[in-house]
Amino acid sequence: MLTLEDIRAAAARIEGRVLRTPTLPSHTLSRMTGAEIILKLDNLQAVGSFKERGAANKLALLTPEERARGVITVSAGNHAQGVARHASLLGIDAVIVMPRFTPSAKVTRTAAWGVRVVLEGENFAEATAFANDLCEREGRVFVHPYDDLAVMAGQGTFALELFEDAGPLDALVMPIGGGGLLSGCAVVARALYPDVEIIGVQVEAFSSLSGFPGPEVVPQGGATIAEGIAVMQIGRQPLAVLRGALDRVLVVSETSVEDAITAMAEGAKQISEGAGASALAAVIGNPDLFAGKRVAIPVTGGNIDSRILANTLLRSLLRDGRLLRLLLEIPDRPGVLADIATKIGRAGGNIIEVLHQRLFTAPSVQAAVLEVVIESRDAAHAADIEAELRTTYSVRRAATDLRLDKF
Image (cartoon, rainbow, N blue to C red):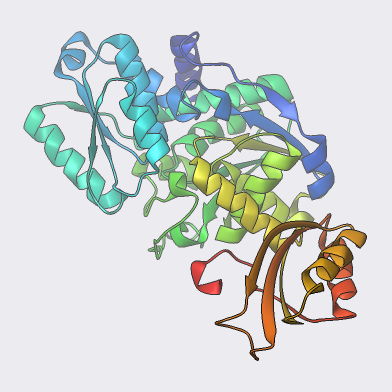
């Protein structure tokens, strides 16, 4: 079983090889949630994720014979980059197997360390099976992304730094994928502050511990913005730790994770990937559970694809009313567009996009449909803009998402 001494030894072993990341309060997120929010910014690591900690510790423990054989791992991106970086620094030949769905930014950054990247499998399970077969054929050392005591010990150094910098906490809220981070941090938390509440977070599609403390369930799987915790089954060794240390598991929705990414960017000025924002989503979604408490949240990674980040921010703005999509039925005559623009401007709105459609959607040859996207301050301001337009025109709100079939 993993011990505090193992984690302290790992901290000494990887000192200078990974960044000691900042632990900071977020006053904006604290006001938003009603809790005292403490952020630990492992998105600032050289590879943009806490995964570097476990990889650095595992590779540092390899014997000369094992280093000569080379290593192989499977990962959706962050563990891959951690192994790639430290294998490169140590001169170890490495192969990284990644599922085909892995965001392109993570694939590119992993390959940039000079390792061999293989895209194989439609999901993590298929990629793992391929990696295990390749490992046997090439005689490499398999570096598991989470079900490995050395990796778990490395991840636990996150909590050593957190408690040294933040002191006592009421709650530690962390994402659960394979369980390596939470199990390592739980060992530290229980040893140093036995009364701290340890809460794990999973996304709906991969909520194998949704019935905790009951047995694992088979998650439905599927697409998720939190691909870093898109793991069907938690690791055997992490689960053994968590069975005796975890207090509860919270499950969050896709939209709540998207909104948490936006809240992190706007409120804490931090870029977080979906898995890294899932803990904040849990706190935002359960205000009664965390009100008035001192709560630590890890920003576990910042490796989000730029296109996905842009779309996520826009979707969140649409949901909370700061982007307003309206469809107006208007007479097809001169001056109408100018009048609409004047009304929107007078109400304080900013026109982002306009689509003037005469041929395909208009109810009459003498009418037109105008779709306009407007930037507003908040939902109340959006309602004021809509009310101003309704004084003259027939107005309805368009769908509050960005799916192509809604345009």
